[in-house]
Length: 628
Image 1 (cartoon, rainbow, N blue to C red):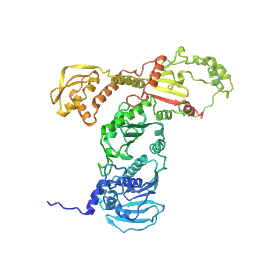
Image 2: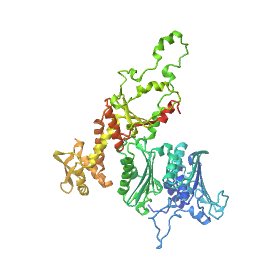
Image 3: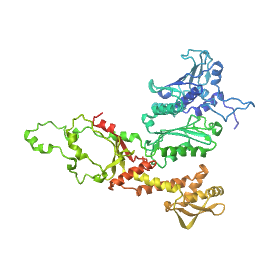
Image 4: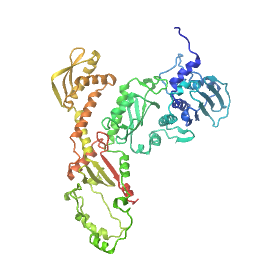
């Protein structure tokens, strides 16, 4: 078999298969080119999922005749510069695109029409039809400068590729998702997206910075995101992490709302997503996922963006540094949130209240006049009564506060004057000292499960089991961090066989393992001897645990398997040993629970990511009763 050179059109079509996987890939490449050209407004239009037509217009710097000719040649780019010695610098890439494959690849599998006008220049047009290039000619262009690229009949030159396209709706969704990612990374650029003639997205350019970025993210992720997002801004050894991450109680059932960027390049990176998941491991169940938009800024020399032709993957020179930065920054932000819970929890609770009382009272029945004798029969029961005369059902399971708690102090004495006062007379209210606390003062316990507390401007409903579970778990974490981990010696030490390098790697972290209750020592060049294990682990697969630890040290440089396993056990222990639902609490116990929640980080959610309390503002309650 002889080696043969491939024809140029075949080379281009092979490249197109790597770069342009689907219409959204073409949109990504063209939008990145517009951003690199300095555009501040990008309009994207697509028909029939982008397979019929993709039209992208920008107000960037534009191209002259020479640039137009080179733009459709493979490996021709304006984004790399030759150095003094004649070599090309591939280590300091600061642009989004640089490979010079996108436009010629598109022209080889579709009909490509480019019209561009440089500053102080004339508008010109060039066409590429299935690889065939037409000569440059003058054209009309609406703006003072910029580029308009129209891509029609995508993959018509490679019809077999069309079989792998999804439905028009799926392709449209992929295009919209790609535009959203680009818009998140570049808040100073305005975007317009139309799909099949319908406007899907219109974003005005925002000011560069945290405020502008948050406005852009809220426009794309929903207004609730800004109310429930935590600001992230941390730097370590020259690597900076910024962005916003949602509260644990503001989570979703999948990871579709996690957006990761490296030097403003949207990426899908296992290292970054793994670090994000690890940071929330203490706060979310396995089937819940946080919302986040995180931006890593790193020296281009410490980053390889040339891993994949589509540039969606990157490789870090020091992945452990980046991973540690993400986990540390997110945990710091979550700790600073204290007992804060998502505002959507209250909105969901309020939406569950039923304000149509007619069906409940039977008032939807036909109207029957009431006789005078019936009115006389119930008149004795229509006189005002004192609050302490209200009969309570023994099965209502509502525990009111004892007199010493001052729950109803002065209510009986003031009842009659209030009834006799003019209806428009203001009733002064001054919150008690306990109500001035963020979670207020306990007023009642209902169904032996929920604590009702009154705050200065509303009320709080606390799930006593979920709240105490988080408190117990955080106490156990503090004890573990302080090295107070109890260990038990094995009656018969266990020998675990490893590779020589793995033994050395594990022994280098022997002291760290001992602090966590795991006692190991070298047993020859290719084995370790496990003498002690954390008491919490009980009867576990020691060999599997040690091998997992070695894998973690090899890949991440951390003892993740042991930490995560112990955290999981601590969570289960906290769940079993916390105040159970169905237990009656005294007033002092309820208020002690509230004060501990206020002083404990992450107390707004239990170990499974569920909210521990719901806060309802007085103004929202008044709306339920038509007072606002």
